[in-house]
Length: 275
Ligand code: DGL
Image 1: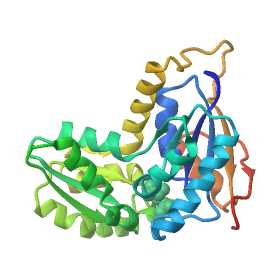
Image 2: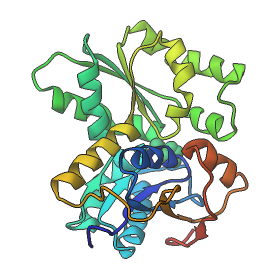
Image 3: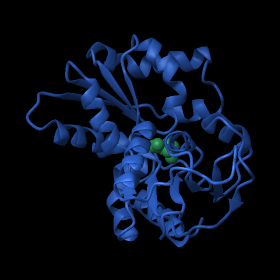
């Protein structure tokens, strides 16, 4: 592992590209290896053992690519399998989605009433609740979590502004609204794409994008370890990203453009475990 080694990023599929977008925003001169386990997505309704096994295999793939940092760009994998990934990563640092977003939510909240939305697996794990409570210490905090499983297919089907999506969002968010939360953690890779609609329903309260705060954490960590690449010699318009997937879904290029905001090169198809 060298300073100019790539940053390894993995997710259950294309959703982690919303995290990669933030990484490229804050660390534009780094090179990246992105792995989307598209053959086995979604992780959000799988058992803990399965999520741990899949995450381990993703991490091992990135380690073999000689990465200098692993970003677990999936809230479900971060909630359930962060320790598993850290075990296989050894001395390669690992950043998950939970802690950076939990800290940001505490800084943003004035009333101490914080909402968290995510997949069923993320909510059931209580990873966000436990981390927010741990970081809050003696401060009086209420965390209310709500699984929003239909948000993932809504985004992947491109129904971001559809009236049916708004009806579903109003239903999902109604309890959080009643509780009068003043901050909401978007605890899933897909949810930042729905932030305009969610913000409108919740009257403009701060929405915490887990990818954004994980990217800031990555920036800080690499700077502290003097491993940050701060400039690039040649004038390159496009960030350097190698894409790997375990299957090429029909809508891969459209979805990648949606999450990342720019077109991606063709991904290489690889096999992990027994798909
Ligand atoms: N990437 C997942 C997450 O952030 C959402 C998709 C899935 O369920 O795998 O939780």
